[in-house]
Image 1 (cartoon, one colour):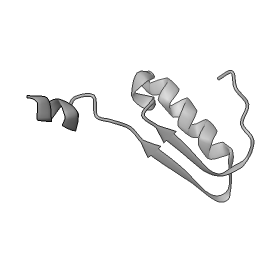
Image 2: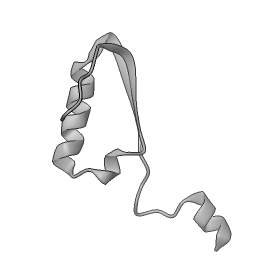
Image 3: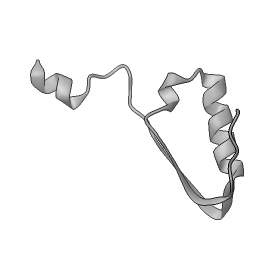
Image 4: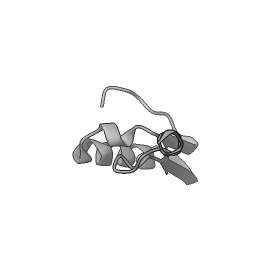
Length: 60
């Protein structure tokens, strides 16, 4: 990956992993984990591409 990380207390990965192939998803997660301060937290939020969003359900 072509970007540098510093050390962080927390990293949030939101709504982007599903755009990456599984191998690259793991690279992102591993890079995040290796750049957490001791006791740091990694928060991952990602959608389920197989499910309709609430907005789509309401329009149906």
